Length: 348
Picture 1 (cartoon, one colour):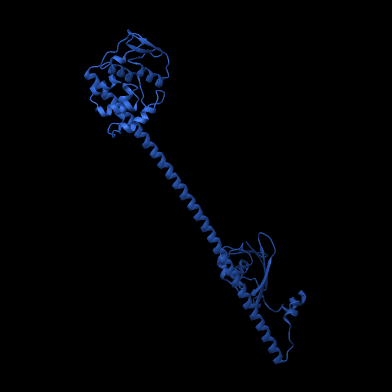
Picture 2: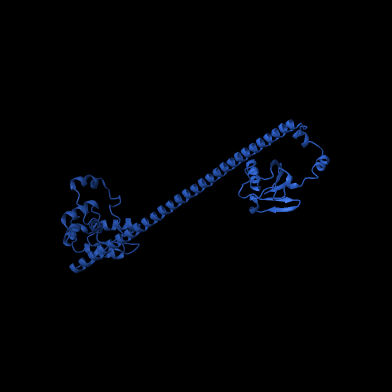
């Protein structure tokens, strides 16, 4: 309205910005127009022709472009600012004596119906009455002071908004860092699983190598034994002596074996027959190794038979006589350990 425009111009605002504010707020009063000017200070002024359709399509029931918090001081300033340049159309048209409109619920007094409608939208009050109370105009000094206060409020709102944005940025950064930590933890766990899997694969390969090595050694010993038997038969044929069958001699009764070996001490046996039982139970493993074979070769043999045994960690014990072999004794031969010609070992 003309009175609001003159008041804003008298406060030193640019005419083009005053026209823009009044159009944008649909001439809803002095306070909304002033808030629009302060909120959009420094922004370029849009073309009035481009903005005309938007303002023309608006209605009195639609919300304004800016969200303004009106408190008691703002209302008082509004009343006093309006009083300085009130036009003839600003007064109530119902009665000649009515000079203002009063809210029956809170007691606030307004210069015209536009300001009363604005107050109703912000507060939800709907009880108004005409009043003969006249709003006193502000002096030039009071205008400048109130304008400065309004600008300080706008600056305070902007400061609060910037703080909220900073807090949101910090919260987002914390979320991002936590997500990064979770991803890093998942990668570490995956890497640890891969290392365990790789170590297990290496252990299997090591056991397979030990098994293959033990099989090769066993084959070599079997070949040596076969060559020795063949050489003994050939010598017996040359000397005219009877040929002794190794399998037949092995199947003789214990009494005959004991009598034939009574004159031979245990240290003179070339081979040692071992029965290896697992401490956890199961079928025992039987093998024949040279008496000069070390206890470590026995460990390699048993490791080649089952994946539950590791050459570096397996231990051996003997129930009768009760004895436990240490790791230092793995380099000694079966003959030196007194395990010839046969023995039963417990592996764990």
